[in-house]
Image (cartoon, rainbow, N blue to C red; front, side, top):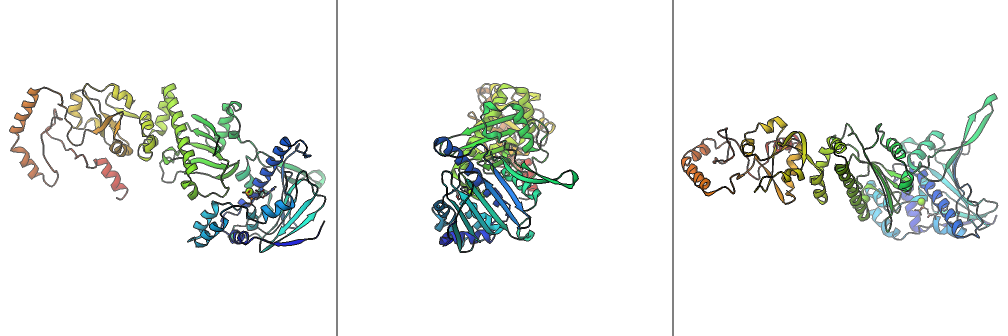
Length: 564
Ligand code: ADP
Ligand code: MG
């Protein structure tokens, strides 16, 4: 070995370190995720280099990561036999933050109003290796670059300086030794010497890392002699990273059950890979059964975000709109920081692009099912139709696609809901609008006096009984050029297009009732705005209708229930 040199951290690095140590992160467990992800990158790099450079003498036959604890010394070691670093690389990569924009970022962090705002800023950046200082008061790193003889030792307490020295006899790869801080549950420092804790963190964050993560486990053998065996902690099976042609539906189903905790097979599987400037893989499932809490206020969305096989977060709302909250699965994006925050994701242009594509894919696969298998589709609609209808309000970009999917009760067939396309194909000559009536249930709607004239004249009316129907039917202007028209509102002129004699009859009727109408309006002035003659009724004498801009009674009730 050579002499030890003590160097100062670059000013910005030091500041960032202070931020990290002084607990920007409430979740300290993620340090292990960061170190394992670095090790995994180093293994990837070595494999790639050895393929490209046949002169590189590197053993790639058993690339792996090892976790080791020393209870007496209170150290946790993360070791890999990957590409390693030269001395210069250590100084450059570990001693500095070789990322542009650090200074500006730190400035903003200092001005951040609270810890949460600061964390979200840091999240854009990713602190990586330095997160080790959240749980360790000293970190030693030993490394040897593949293709080089010299090894390097780096050591720091994360304050102002680090020591660097030459080290002999190191194997190729990198070893990071954490001298652990005392357990402090209040500060979120868990017992990182405990086997169960390490297993749990690996399972949660690093299960799909493609290289084995091993740990020596001591077992009490016979005669009280304990034996140590290396166990692999991660499953390594990232189904989404494999080509579609190599994955069977059984494997997809198994994976779905694992991530969703559902016992049933999924109804649909969507597996895609995007290449180009923003690479990602997505493996999504549409369940066959709606969860019981689909309509509770805080149901979670089912899409998990990974970055290069490292688990980042559950319930990633930036990737799936609310009305597709029943979709389960995984999105693995390659070029995001591991510390990316929800806030940043929400505003990331590329993530929005991903979301747009995923939504199109999911709606497309639902559409395919509708075309291919009406019976299966009817089942799916029964489970998720009500939620999908929320999309008509929430997702203006996909209204057309959603209108194509929706199935609605109608006066045409009491047994079977209709699509809008089928409704339109049955419209009467001269009918322009899609007629509907909302109400609490089918019977109420069918027996409504508003129905009479429409039934008598043979017009089909959609029977809308979901609260959400009130909202979208108001908001969505038209289907295929046909406006939606509530038959409970405004003037629906069923006589349009009939002959002149009818017009004369109408004039006569108006004259007959000329005195009655103002009297009715005056007498009922507390309850109605206006009394007018109607062509809607055949057997009832009168009915109450709303103005075009009025809320329907059910919508009024809904708003009142929401306290508005
Ligand atoms: P990031 O992983 O986002 O680049 P980190 O702070 O985690 O940031 O790591 C900084 C750099 O240090 C890495 O990009 C890599 O070049 C180097 N590095 C860290 N850990 C290892 C390792 N185990 N083996 C080789 N290089 C490493
Ligand atoms: Mg990293």
